[in-house]
Image (cartoon, rainbow, N blue to C red; front, side, top):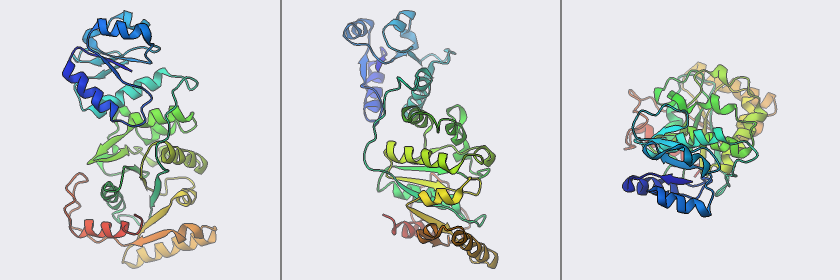
Length: 326
C-alpha cells in the first residue's frame, strides 16, 4: 500500500502506526510527491494507493490494482471511497479496511496469516439478572491486558451500556455475522474494520437487539469464534453471554473456562441450582466442570469502564477470580 501525501510529518507518523499494526496484508511505502510515486510504480504495481484528496486525480486509478482510497484532508469529499484524514489513526485504519474489503472478491483477497498461539476463550454467563455480569466481564478484560491482547464480545439482549453499543457506520456484531460464512480473509478484514477500543480493551459494538443474533446456529458461532481465536492474535477472548445466543450450552462448551455469576438471595440460589441440573440433564457436565462460581460484591456506584483500575473491593475481587486462569 502506497501512502501518497505531501505532508511529510503526517506520512511519517501514519506509516509508523501502520507498520506497528500486526497482520495487515500490505507492505507500506510512503511517497510525498508525484515524481516519487511515478518512479515507484514503474517497478511495482501497488495493491492500493492511499492518496490525500489534494493530490488525487484520475490518473492514479491506473497505477494500482484497486481504486485509490482517498484521505479526506478538506472535509469536502463525499465519495464512498474516502476516509477522514484528521482523526485518530485507529479510526483511519478501520475506514481503510472497510473500504478495501468492499473492493475485493474472496478469490483475490490477500491472506491474513495467523500470528502466535490460539486465544484462550473465557465465557461469562449467569441465569441471574442484574448480577454485574457485564461489569465483571469488562473489568476482567481490562485486568487481563497485563497478560496480553484482549477482545471483549457482548451477546447481551438490549445491552444497557452506551459505550459498548455505539457502532456507528463501522458496524456492530450483528453486521459482522453476515460474514461468518465468508472465506477467512474476507471475514478477518471486516472484523478488523469494526474493532473499537475502550481503555485498551478491544471490542466489537454489540448488536442493538438480541433478536439480531438469536437465529444464528451454534455451528456458525463455532466458526466465528475459531476464526477469531486463530487469526486475530488475541491472548484472551471474553464472551459476555446471554440466553439470546442459540445453542448457548454448545457455545459454553467451546470455552476454556466459564465464570458463573451467582447471588445470595433464595431465588438466585434456586436459579443456579436449576441451571446446573439442566446442564446435567442434557449431558453438559463438562460445562459445569469448567465453570467457576463467583458472587460479585455489591457496589453503590459502578465505576465507568474507562476509569483507572486503582483497586477497591470490586477490582480486587475480579483480580482474585482471574488468578485461577492466568
